[in-house]
Image 1 (cartoon, helix red, strand yellow):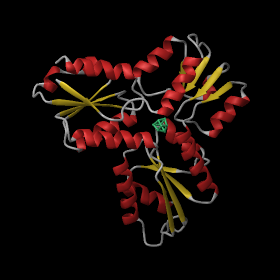
Image 2: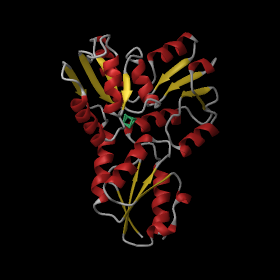
Image 3: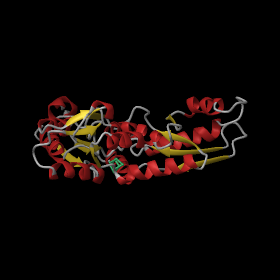
Length: 289
Ligand code: SF4
């Protein structure tokens, strides 16, 4: 089977920066905790676990040692709490996430109702909401959001005067545009101001446009990365929407020979948290079919 890789795939600079920091710490990382999963990739998580790094969900669950804020960022409250407890805090928030946090924070202070286009349970989104003093609304569905916006005012009929929208950095660009368009359609006529900040990061946009281009040239697409990784799942969804039969795998062993029975060319792309070695192993396995 022939394989063609996407022109942009795998680790983004934000994830590389975080992982380099752990490499620089050396082999033994006992007493080092990460607030949430460092990257949504099982191979990376396993290797950190073997070095003694523990994942915690809440600062309240750790009494001493080093707390690492991951590339996804954190709420200002959790950072303050960690410092107050005497923990050594290492902040590896990706600068592109920091930028979204700052935009959301400034808009909130300027009396805008901030809306985050994203997944409310994702660590990055919870962090951004924290930077708005927990006032931001989170949604990916304008139909569901508009009644919530209207309900925020006392009359029950008017929307907040100023709405400002930012996006989780890894959302699919076409869906963000659709969300904005649906929102304009569905808001009542008395809305006054909407600001839209497209904060999807460049590496995500590059990987999304690369998979769209690759989809035109291949017979089947393999997307490599953690099943929990939002940006990897979005790459698989975009590829499928482009009309190519697409499979999302975490490991080479998940590949099935019958997916390639028709021959031709297999496209390979990978999420921003997928190590090069895993991509190489997947490519080698496909080429052996
Ligand atoms: S996906 Fe984008 S925002 Fe997230 S770590 Fe990578 S570069 Fe930073």
